[in-house]
Image (cartoon, rainbow, N blue to C red; front, side):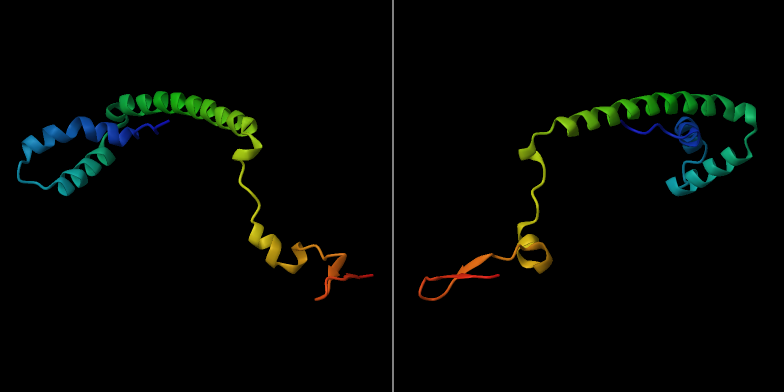
Length: 116
């Protein structure tokens, strides 16, 4: 699920076009700075609808994330053994502590040599 916008981003989205019309020569970066200053100085009554909307959207997001995480756990549990990653064969072969020592071996003539 996609994360919801912050209250400030919702506010900026709503106010940006009107500020661009008021200040047509301002760059986008300057408009963004101005939006930040206006948001910082805004009183709680002006911020309230954006903060409430953010809280509602975050609750929906959290619920969707919990559902998604549960689905991922189920999918992982149901994965077939063939789909699971295989052990690193090279590590098993080349690291002495991971390798089993042979109990028997053969010499050049093919005769079996036993290690006791």
